[in-house]
Length: 133
Image (cartoon, rainbow, N blue to C red; front, top):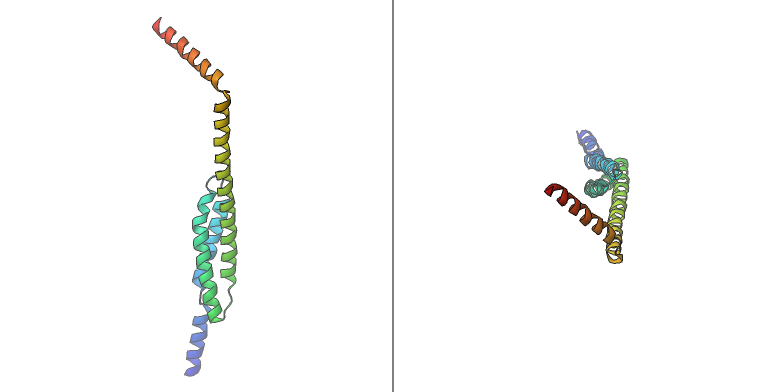
């Protein structure tokens, strides 16, 4: 009878961390896919970070049980890749926004839009006079 309990313990330990490993892998794949979508890729940080946490917990459970941790490793790698891509996209969008703001401020200071403002005023005057006739 003791042999049966040992076999049951080994089979229970062989599945240690597998569920979390699969969940981490799925979230890592989702994060990596979302990260490639322009302007929405920054939202990949959410499943990526959750995938990293789940995969790390799965790896610790697999280490304690002495079983393979392939799913957890794959999930960790996919989650890290997704987070890196999302972080890079966040950096690029933030930098682009700051550069655009600086450029618009420079255009306003240089007076480059003065002629456009004058043209708009003239157009409004023409429209007003045509309405009154």
